[in-house]
Length: 395
Image 1 (tube, rainbow, N blue to C red):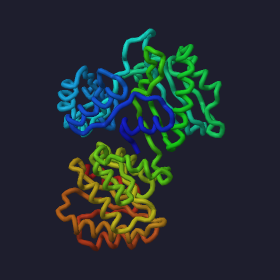
Image 2 (tube, one colour; image 1 turned 180 degrees about the vertical axis):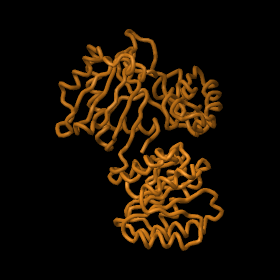
Image 3 (cartoon, rainbow, N blue to C red; image 1 turned 90 degrees about the vertical axis):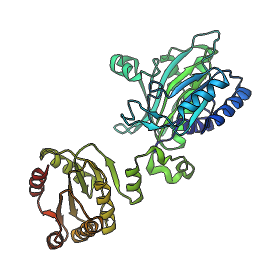
Image 4 (tube, one colour; image 1 turned 60 degrees about the vertical axis):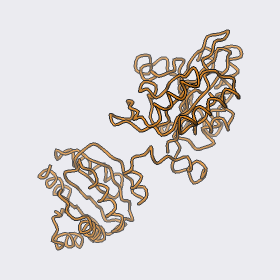
């Protein structure tokens, strides 16, 4: 589960991470009030307004603006709230901005030079360790740093049994080129960041940039968290942070029916039971000349209602030109799936795309008879080869 920057910063702050203070606003008037409050609490005279959407690259897309007075705060907020923000991560359609974060300006003058760093913590599934990735060259173009200067990307492996050790925090601060008070601040920042990452069972925390201010403070200026869905039962308070407006409506509907669904860009919808079978089915579609339109796993205990809901999701995609339902009857019975397909077909009506159903396993023959006897324009197959040939005919 993804969360917004302002929510991520709240988690950081609760765990002792120093952040760029900010207040979320849903209207231009709220933005002005937030700016006044921040000025009173932090002394800031300028403010940074940030669009709150689940996407990176907001600055390049016009989703991060500096306001130097309250009139500019209101003007920028008026233009930003409601805009369709397009970044390299949103695609050409962009995302609608429904709220903004009004944050204090932390790029003030001082006795030393400001510096920006990149830092993230994620799970290394190969080693079973957590990995802190960091670079002395943070900012908007960290992808270019990774591509053009890979030697400037450092990694520190953390044994989850021990947690981060003092020498590791010092090593990171040293590799970032820090000294004096900034060095001490960075080691404290790293310990607190690891605590925040662990406390919410995150699969990723990314801070870009981590800022060394001109008076040697270390702050999280941006923040991104990916939370492990499988651990959310331990964190009911985090579930309340979920923003359904930022998620694909089809995937939200799929989750409501306990379906594993991922939208793709192809023309052949597919419904299967089991992730491995799903991958094989998508391979079949590609080898037959089509492109998968989705990944849809109905699970081992699929009912007729589940199959009906899955078929509706697939057919709601206007790009779908054919549907391949590929079910192996292990736990689930093939005749039950077949009845679900027939019932869904009758309820939906006017299905103008070919539907191919391949059933194998428990009650496969009975399922094929249900399909064949339905009188509907559903084509059945028993083997993968038969299914592949039928797909090839219709794409």
